[in-house]
Figure 1 (cartoon, rainbow, N blue to C red):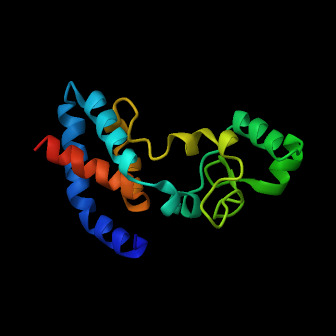
Figure 2 (cartoon, rainbow, N blue to C red):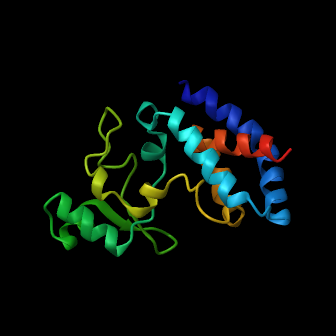
Length: 161
């Protein structure tokens, strides 16, 4: 996959995707949760995240206190040492990684702490969540980061057209 070409295409489609997602928000189709989850599962059955890894290279997840506990234990550090080594507080007051790409991302796009990765990483790109229309701003952003999110929005758009 050529990530640069994909991102150009995704950026060019943003106005169309935004218009569609706003339509979902206004109309709130009764079956949206079920259809979105089905499309999410179908797309992820075909897409290999390990061939991309763009989310782990570019998008810093929000880190919770629970995440810190699990990640610190996974790398055999105290929570305090883990925070000092890997985390910072951003301009919004959220705990995030000090730098990107993710410090736990290997060259093969495998996560060294996969079983203990942050909740935000486990849920990315959030396309199978209930009431998808409530996170339009995030979905639009994620279509440029994640080929699967882009494809899911395209398939939802086709389904509802």
